[in-house]
Image (cartoon, rainbow, N blue to C red):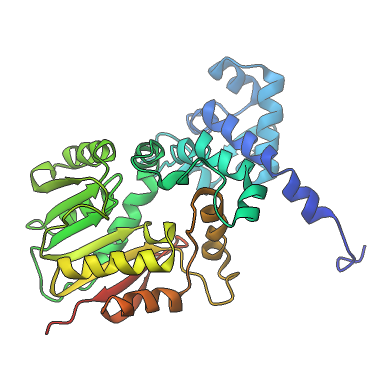
Length: 339
């Protein structure tokens, strides 16, 4: 068969994408990856271990093999390296909790209403979308996304040059789980962190700080970042996964406020999905624009040039990008002049 011939496969495969979502959700809800990791490797063993029908678990596991989540040899299922690391609940890197946010009713509803969002040019969710004041989805985000955020936060803390500052004062804006700021507390024993977010969300950050032994070095700043006095001066202001929720004008005004809270030589760090100017590459970053269309009124996946314009308009200098592999995100860094 001529592989270059027109084919409806891409359309059909995309149309049935919900089936793969349902498959992985069922596997996580039944905790099959952990059971296989513990040695229950056949359909009979898994059925007994999880109290489910043998036919059901056989078909589900075969589907997981086809999709690349499991291996199969002589009727025995096994974990792939990725599944062993990220989907077995015994692994410290397990992040199946992200399902709670990514498949939450609010997020899914935004995609159910995507046609209307395209017509409007912004989310068709109730007024404000996910950016409505004190939206409960962000408590869910803070609890569910921690396994993914921890390594990213440590990547930022390790890669950012503080130019001799050994006891940084760090402000974590829209802190959520707080793990970006707490990564600096972990790296700098004398550092002090201020976490800003809605009060209900900060309870999650406070809990993480207590668990990590850093609660005495964490200050909470509840409220909207657009309304509260940020205080300072800070050596670092973090804006993890936040600017993309707003249009460039709002981002620029917030960056100006951040600029005023920094000490001379301090830096602002926005962790973002940075697309190329063509808005379709790299795919992992550029595709995030659709997330913003579904859930916000004016958010986007901005290009490096667009971020550079925003930071420059807010008077930041020495702009640079700090890659955060293996994620699709990048840290956009700007510094406040020393004089």
